[in-house]
Image (cartoon, rainbow, N blue to C red; front, side, top):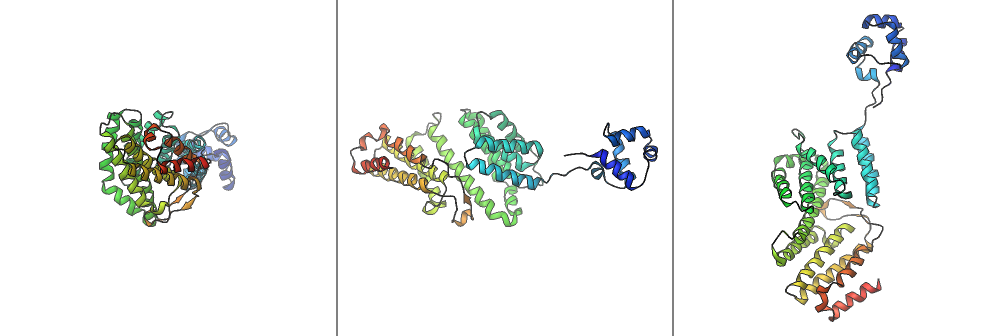
Length: 358
C-alpha cells in the first residue's frame, strides 16, 4: 500500500482554490503545519484525517491515495509462477513466491493454505516450526460464514498429523488425526462444495486427488512405522486396497507421473511383502510385472488432461526433468535380497533384461 498524502492535499486545495491558511483555520492548526504536510516533511495527526476528508468531500482512502491491492489478481499471478517453479522441481523458489505473497496478504486464507502446503512439500523438517505455526493458525481461524475455509482446516489437520507421524511423534499425530473427522463429516464441507457453484466438479476432482494422496501416504506410514505392530500380511493388504482404489479412479493408468510412481511403489511393496512372507510366485510375479509397467509408462507420460469424469478435466503437469527415475528405482528393487528365491525364474530374468536394456 502506497500513500501520497502530500501531493493529494496540494491537488485538492488548488482545485478548490483554498489557501493553506483557510485549511489550517478549519482544522485549528497553523498554516506552517499544512505547509509541512504538503512538502512531505510531516504528516497530519491520524485524528485529523476524517476532518480533512470531510472538508474536501472525499473518503479517507481517497485522501490517502490508498492503492487497493487486487488480491484475486495477485493470488492468480503467484499461483501461476509458483506452479511453474514447482513443476520444474524448483520448490525453494516456489516457496519464496508464497512467502512474499503472505507478507502482502497476511489475512488471505488461500495464501495461508498455499504457504502451509509449500512448507510441507518443500522441506517439512527444515520449516517445521513455520509450518506448524501456520497450519495451527488455519485450524484455529474463525471459519464461521466461510464454509470453504473448513476444507482448509481439514487440510491443515491432515498435514499436521502426517508431519508429526513422520517425526515419530505418534501421540501428537493421533491427536491431530482425530480432529479431522468432525471437520470432514461436517455440513460446512458439503455447503462449501455447493457454494462453489460451477466450480463444484473441479473442486471435487481436487478433493479426489488429495484423498488418494492421503491414502497412499497413510499406507506408507503403516508400512514403515515400527511402532505399528500389525504384521506384514496386514501391511500388504493395505497396499493392495490402495492400489485397487488408484486403478479404479485412474482407469487405464490415465494418470500423471507422481500417481504412476505411487502405483509403482504400491505394487513393488505388495511383491516385497509376499517375497518376504508366503513367497507365492504368482503374486510376486504379477505385482513386479505391474510395477514394471508403471515404471515404463511413467518414463513416457506427458502433461495432459485426465479423462475420468470423477476428475472432471483435472490437468496433470508433474513430469520431472528425470522421467527415468522410477525405472532406476525398479532396478534397485530387483536387486534386493528378498527376490533371491526368484532369480532363476524366466519371468524374473526377463524383467532384469528389460531394465538393463533401458
